[in-house]
Every structure is written in structure tokens, then in C-alpha cells.
Length: 120
Image (cartoon, rainbow, N blue to C red; front, side, top):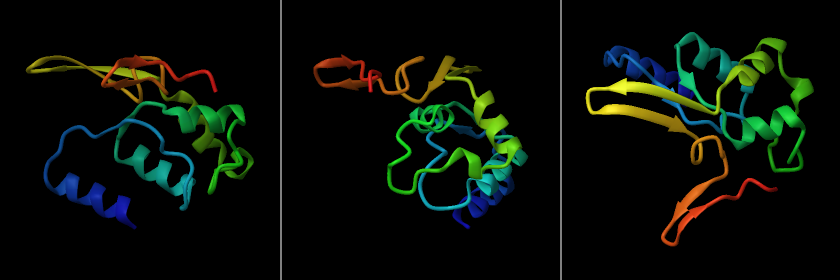
């Protein structure tokens, strides 16, 4: 599995922190296994729109959408525990990690400025 190989590589390389910016859910694959690998590797993740959609039962008609009732309780709990943002202190100053723009997991920056696309 690609994720398993990447996590092993990063561990051997001595990477101290792995951060995921969301959209872990949906798509082909085994979400229970994916979450277990991320959790076991200590990956610090934020929730993206796909996690929000899964937990609220939205957009489940997407191709390869994950059905919540097919997940182990610990997977659902881990996904539900993900914050929308995380802040880290770095040598260059504070770092805000999010999926979109701050708490807006669908927000984006375009050449014309900030676009808030949260209203599905």
C-alpha cells in the first residue's frame, strides 16, 4: 500500500512531524486501515470537507463515497475528533494548518481574492 510505504520512508528519514490537511475520507481503499495507519504513525490531521460530509451524511452519492455505518467506531471517533485547524510554532513563526481557509473547509484563494464556498 502506498500510504504504508510513505509512512515507513518518513519514519526512516527521521521526520519528526507529519501533518495531513484533510480529505482522508472517500475514494477507493480501506478507510479503517488508513486511519489506523495515520493514528499509529502519530499523524496530526485536520478535518476537510470530506470528513465533514461523511460525519453529517452529506454528499454520499459521490463516486467511492465512504458510508459511515461501514466504519469501525474507533475510525468514526478519530475522524470526529479532528479539528478544523491546528497551529504550530516553527522557527519561522506560527503556522496555521487548515484544509481551506481557517475554519472554512471549502474556502479558497483565487486570483480575484478570497472565495467562501461553504454553502453547499
